Image (tube, rainbow, N blue to C red):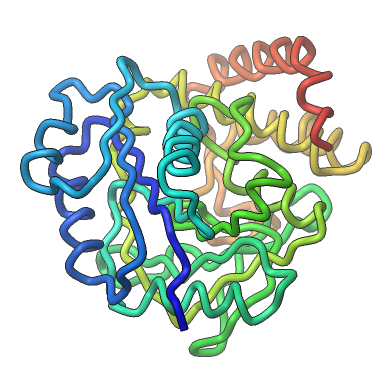
Length: 309
């Protein structure tokens, strides 16, 4: 059977060493031929594209003059791939991934082809030490939950998953478009995409039998704490208004987020009902100011937020 054409879009910014390792991993550990890598350099200070053109001449490189954010950067790569390559599948991949299964792409496509309704496919992502990082989860009321236990090799039906490696059918791209740039610069654009695809009638799957290391890029860490917290509040409000009912979105926006501004969890995996797991944030006053600022921005974007609801 002829292999499907796949465009692998990799976005990078100021992570030259990790990018080099990711490209080497993909090129050496992918038992698949009919694919092309589209790299988008999102304004890296030392211009990663020059290194890529020298060491990986088959990789298509697009250079942005500044960091346009996760959604915009990926969408530029998607548009370039559509024009030049006309792929049947797109893979959106971070610049900090390590392939652990040479048949990863074949297996992900097989999951997508098994059911015509499947539109988006993810894999098991682990930390460098082997601990589970993400296999997706569900939207339950006002809360995004994570799946923590699964059977070995199980293919899960989920609502959303971390978009560090995301296989998307061309049909889905044609129907709902690329990532929503309202979530610029980063956060929740991947969950939003999965849920929009699901609302359009597609299934979202995670193949736990395919494992990849996600090193958690330091690109986001380059932002100041205030900017990261403001972005978290802003995008959480956008996401809640779009994907939750009135009651659940109001609870998350006006009860949960103020608590997030004031308190921090000691252990991320602990349940919210364990009050001993919380401690007071020293920056609580500033966080509340940033949250109220996010409320204001959300009011100005309300029509745009609800347009894709």
